[in-house]
Amino acid sequence: MISEIHIIGGGLAGSEAAWQSAQCAVPVVLHEMRPLRLTDAHKTDGFAELVCSNSFRSDDWENNAVGLLHEEMRRANSLILRAGDAHRLPAGGALAVDRDGFSQAVTQALEEHPCIEIRREEIDWPPEGWSSVIIATGPLTAPVLAEAIRTCTGEDSLAFFDAIAPVVYRESIDMSVAWMQSRYDKGDGADYINCPLDEPQYRAFIAALLAGEKTEFKEWESSTPYFEGCLPIEVMAARGEDTLRFGPMKPVGLANPRTGGRPYAVVQLRQDNALGTLWNMVGFQTKLRHAEQTQIFRMIPGLENASFARLGGLHRNTFINSPRLLDGQLRLKRDSRIRFAGQITGVEGYVESAAIGLLAGRLAASELLGRGAEPPPPTTALGALLAHITHGADAKTFQPMNVNFGLFPDLPPAGRVRGRDRKKAMAHRALADLDSWLTRARAAAAQSSR
Image (tube, rainbow, N blue to C red; front, side, top):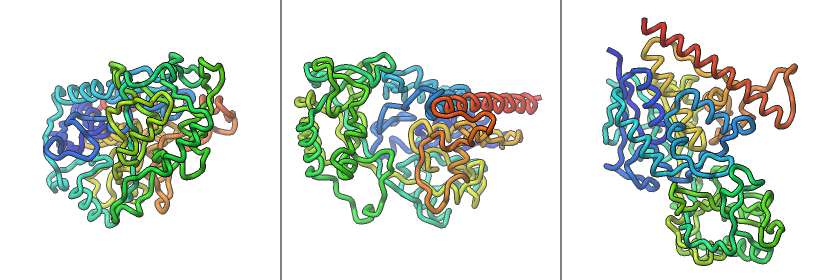
């Protein structure tokens, strides 16, 4: 009888790992502590609940590394991408999803799979009797398990703060001021609500951000760094008065239909649910106190009477030093029965977390079935991300990383091109190499079933 794979954590990575292992006909036990123990960010007991944003970012596989990761995961039968595609919302060239429908679809698929058993319980540390384990507890690992990880690895986990953007009720946005348009008219051309600011309005807004009362850190949190890809908006503002105007508030690719010109700065909102009643303030993650948020964000033209379904927040995120602690199969070097997956490995982003879950589930199942666990080629988005966190990054300076073309091996000299053509060439190479990898995996599965 094949041993069970025990997966701890029902977020995006744990859900994807469970699905991939079960699709190989390997028994899976998925352990999720919610609702017995809640976190500071989750609101439901559903699997793969999205807590920070509803966007999986760009879906353009030829020009964007995360879009390429989407396509690779689709070809690898990803449950997360299948549910994302089924509950897609308008978002220009991005893949945004209805939060509730997405989580419900993932939960239903896992609950109905004949090879998956779900146990609602908190796990302090995998018992010795578990021969194959995937820890996918994400950025909000329970304190007891986090301490056990630190004890097992012999070093402290690193940590940073991850901030959450506010969500506004659509009916409270003044559309006599704001307008619908995607930057450069991408996607359907009108997937975002745009709130324009002139220069005096922008300067006043920045001043208010800097003066606003922020959440105070506890003593033990004071040395924890932010992740550069998800900085609170007031932290960005403190780096220079024009930082936001060249960041999330940049007006390029937009034209105010009432003036015919480009605004000095703009705040964009992206649809957050299928009904279109909730809209997310793009890039406006914050650690401002709630009362300050309401007052300051209502300074934005079009949001003077905004009603907030959720205000911004802040949570502590932990991750291990994967280049030092994990092998190329995502196994803990000190205890090879244990794999790690998701954000706790030091990848950043929903899609990247699910991608590492996909790999952990496939590698664990292949190992148990005796097929030989072959990682994807480093020329693929999946392989490049895996290589980076397991041995490509400097362990001394390891920080969370989104997938990007800088992680890929360069094209051979004869095939080198520049600019967009270079990305397209790398993307086409990636999919060709991925298809070969998947073909080998299917052949190995067919051989072992004889």
